[in-house]
Image 1: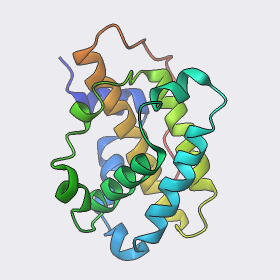
Image 2: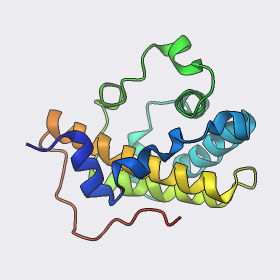
Image 3: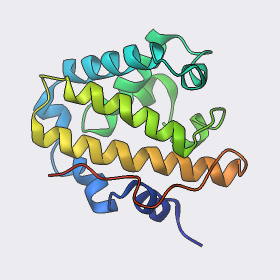
Image 4: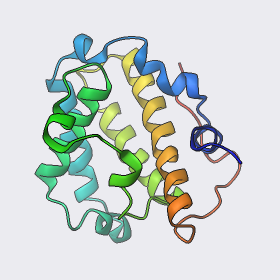
Length: 169
């Protein structure tokens, strides 16, 4: 049986070592707090304005401001900053926290589409950091899909081979 990390790498097209390239540099020290707030704000503005009702509905029971705060605090913590998320909400436990949502391959791709747009439009994150973040986000999105399928086998669909590409260095 494949581990969740192995499935995430297979489905995302991002090798585990590339996904955790964010650990090579303290991105929080390098970038500061504001780029993470800006990225999360840009991302969730796109999500809450998404033209696809099925995708918007995933977030219908969440306040946009809360989603932004949860995300940037998690990113800050995961990328070398203070444990803002854990201090306020406890351990991130990504799979458990995403359990109520249909984290399918289709939803992961849509999430990644919006994150890619937010990153592309971010002027306060350098190109090398963006590549590291894209690889981490892509791998983590499919890690959550694998975790969701483990708990909710009816949510998922098999990915199309070659449909996913990692970020280029």
